[in-house]
Picture 1: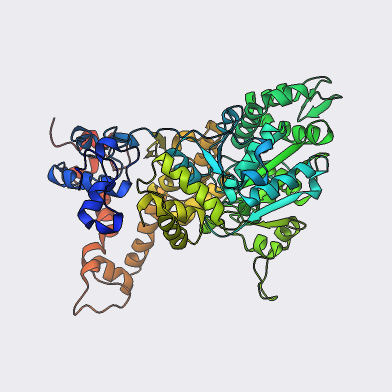
Picture 2: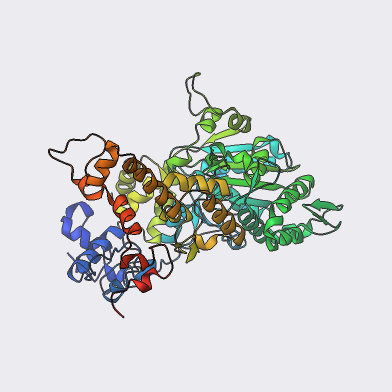
Length: 449
Length: 148
C-alpha cells in the first residue's frame, strides 16, 4: 500500500482496508480540505485529557471562558470562542459551479448543482440562511443547490403567478425532515431576485414567536407590537431590494402613524425612516406592504421558512399571563393577512416552507388544514388559527431521484466532502442508506456511513 | 448591576432568572411579573429601559417581599408562641410541628425549626448586641467586620 503521505486517497478499495487504515486514510491532515469532526474531536480529546487545566475548588466552569485550553491548542480542534484551528480546518476550496439563473430552471439542468448568482449573493447575505443549510454551506463552498424536478415545476408556477394577485398563489412546501423544503424556498428566492421581484424573505419565522424580541402593548387595544423586530425587518427588506424599491414612487400623501409621507417619495426612503425610528417601523411596514401591493410594475414575493410557527400560540404572554396567538402581534398579523389571502398584492405570490427542526414549533392546525394529518372530530383545534390557514395550496417535496442524487454526489466529491472514488456501487450504497433523503445523503457522504 | 429594593441584580442575567433572587419571588411569580410588564423572556437586566425599571420597582414594592415577608413569617410564628399553642411550643423546641414522627428522622426540623424565634429573641435583648445594626441596614457589613 502506498504511504499515506504520498496520496490523499487510498490505493486499495475501501472494503479491503483494515479499520485503522481506513480511519487514517480518512484524516490525511496535510491534504485535508475538510476533516470529519468526529475524527478531530477524538484527536483533540486525547490531548485535552493529558493537560486538563486544574480548576479551583467551587468554581463552576459553565460560564467561565476557557482561557487555559487556548494555550494547549496544539492538538485541540477548536481555539477559544468557537474559532476553528487552522491546522485541522483548512478553508474549503470553492468548487466551480455555474450560476442559477431563471434560464437554468429547465428540465435540461435537472441534476446540475448551480450556485447563487453573484448579483444575488449580497441580497441573500442580508438574512441568515436556514440553520442546517447554513452548516452545509459552511462546509462546502460556494453555497450551491441542485436543480430538482420540484424546483422546475415550482418555478414554472411562480413565473405564471408573476401577473396574478398573490391571494391566488399561496403555497406551502411540506415534506419529511431533510427533504429539501428550505433549499427549494431558497432557490425560489434566488430566482425571484434574479428576475427583479421585490422579495421579502424570512428564514426563521420561529424567532418572531419565541419571545426573543422586545414587545409592547398597543394602548387601547389587545394587540402588541415588536418595535425592534419591525425595524430589523424593514432594514433587511431595504438592503435586499434597494434598487427595485427606489424606482417605486408613492402616488399620493399617505399617513404613517402620527406623521405623513409626502407624495412622490420612493419606497426606499419610506423604509429608511422605519429603520431610523423603531417605534414608527410597524406603521412604515404596513404602509409599505399596501403600497407595494397596489402597484403592478414589480411583482412581490413573500417567502417564509418555518411557517408552522405562524399557526400555533407564541411564547409571548398578555398581561394576564395567557399565551398570545400570532394574530395578537402586529407584525405576524400583517404577514398572516397576506398568507391567508385577506390582503393581496396585485402581482405576487406567498410561499412558505414548514420545518420540523424544533418540536416546539409543530402546528397541528396547519397540518390539518393542509390535509397532512387527520384528527378526531372531537379534538378541539383553535378556530381562530384555523381561519388563517384556509385556502393554502400544498406542494409535497420528495426525496432525491437518482439523477439529482448523482449530480449532488459529484459536487460533494469536487468539494472534498469525501475522498473515495464515486463509483456506481458507492453511489448506490449512499442512496440506499439515506433513502434519497437529502440531509441524510449529505451525512452519509460526509461521515462515510 | 441593577440595585433594586436592597437586592443586586447582575446585568448579564435574564430578568426571568434574576427576579427570584428576591426573597418571596419564585419561578411562577417571576413569569407573572414579566407577563404583567410585557417583558420578553430573553430580556437581560441590562436591556431594561428606565420606564420598565420604574414599573418593576413599583410593582415589587406593592408585593410583600424581602423584609416585609420575613416580618410576616416571624409574626405568624410568634403568634403561636404567644397564645401558647402546641405549634408554638414545637417551634420553640426546634422539633417537627406538623405531627411527624420524632423517633427517627426529624433532622430537618431540628436544624431549621425555631430559627425565626431565635431572631426574635435576639432583637428584643437589651445587651450589647442591640446596638449592632440589623442585617437590612447598609452599614451592616462594615460594623460586623471582624478584621480591619
